[in-house]
Image (cartoon, rainbow, N blue to C red):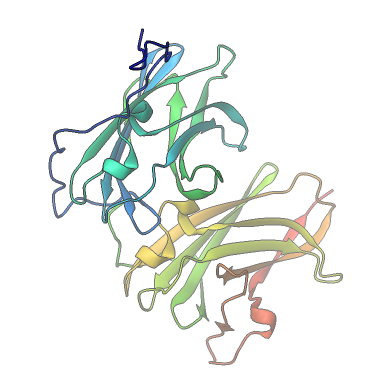
Amino acid sequence: GARTPSGAERGPIYLAPIRVTAGPPLPPEAPVLYSFGPEIRLYGATVEQMAPDRLAVRLVWGARYPIAANYGISLRLQDSTGREWAAMDTQPGYGFLPTSLWRPGEMVTDRYEFPLPTDLPQSPAYILRVVLYRFPSLQAIGECPIGPFTVPLEMPYEEKIAPRQFTMPPVPYPMEVTFGGEIRLTGYDVKREGDHLLLTLYWQALTSPRGDYTRFVHLFDPATKTVVAQNDAPLRGEKYPTSWWVAGEVVSETVTLSLEGVRPGAYRLAVGLYDATVTRLPAVGPDGYPIPDDYPMLPLEVQIEP
């Protein structure tokens, strides 16, 4: 065992990890899957089932600037309801790829064996959430959902970015509401599936949005203004924040509202956007006049039968 110069036992000695060789350079055209603060980008994510009780997770990172801190990483497996089935917390590369040693412009390939519980139900809609956080506050600097994918996973799942679209598809119910002079809601479609209402929204960027906005959908009683069902989430479910959009780009999304427990009656739908301070973006109708409370209502009535 290790000893001091005087011969006393020192116990185990742990050496900090040292990176000697640099990783390969990131291609200039490498697409970004997700941004973790101003410093770190995620460029690749692959999930593969290596055994009934384990997933193999491969993440490809890049640093834009030198990083002063060593961040922790958390992987969390969730089903479509948000229930967490498995999780692991460690440091990048199990501690052998500390973020303070990442060099700007290099590709950092990070691999994990993620344990699965024996009672994990078969499901086609699992999400693996990747979270980077600070020590010792545990404050997250960013997180990214990988998926959805099926477990058991017959083929490796690779996260990819959908190509940008600039052509508006046929919109079943056109309308025109502009939010903050940046994004326009051009129309919608709606259908009922069992106890769920599926609302498809068609958006278009008028300019490159200045922030990452959250979309809200409210199903409410027009007599009492009581909201009976709602869905607030980043557009495209965090995978494609509005700050990444460019002028003229067309983005569509389908929002699911649960109708479980909603009493029979006639209801209305309202759709809007708000910023990081939970302030609604100014909404303007096709006539150029502001919409009261920045709370646009869709021109349809939703009937819930007994």
